[in-house]
Structures are given as structure tokens and as C-alpha cells.
Length: 166
Image 1: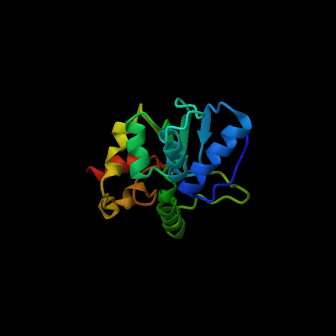
Image 2: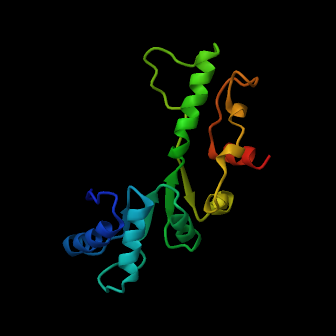
């Protein structure tokens, strides 16, 4: 395994995959830190260069519209994302803390939100992301422990999508 900085650039990742292929030969998997870079690897494969593995498994991060379309087409294996929601979760927790429902414990650095992978197996649930989503339609008060009789947070993206459709 080799970690290579591509500086978040689709164009740079196009070039890097050729360099890595020259160094290592047959590459089975390319995992990129952004969907844009994953798409750059896909661009290189699409260029027709015979030295690249056309069955390379490609993954990325960000849940971009183009990345999700390539997952649906079976050309990108996965995109991990949901991190854009972390600001909302932080604000909800701060609101709850301010209103006496403190979840903060000294020394507790536990995470409360997992990033989620979109694959061909679950792309249908996430297709709403390929449209312009009006996040103002989400009633984020539904996620607050102060405003509900819940004892733990459910910040799953499925829960967000459910609230979006209510």
C-alpha cells in the first residue's frame, strides 16, 4: 500500500495513478480522500491506457453528485460521507447542553456520529442527494434530547432523510 498526496485535485490524481501503475504494476484498489480524486482515477482508466486495470475498485469521500452517479453506474465502489452534517450535530448538542441536557463528560472524547458509505447496494436510499436538497426543510429540533423524550442521539443519515420527507 502506498499513500500519495493528490492535493484534492482530480487532474493530479489522473497523473498519479499512471505513476503508481508504472511503479507497482497491476493495481487492484484505489482509495481516494475525495470523490473528485476518485473520479480522476476513473478518468485515467477511461483514457484507454492499456496498462491500467479496468476492473480496479475505486472509492472516495464526499458524496458528490458525480461520484454518486458513478456508484449507480457500478464504476465507483463506494463513497463515504455525511461529514457535512457534523456542524448541525454540534449545534444540537450545544443547544441541549445550554438547556441543561449535558452529554459532556470530562475526558470523554467519544464520537457521536459515524460516517456512512454509499455503495451500489444502498444507492437508492441516497438518490435524494443527487438533487438540490433544501436542508432548511429538516426540522433539526427532532434530533434534540431537550425537545424529545429520547436518551440518546440518532444522527444517522437515514434518520435525516426520514425527517426530510415528513
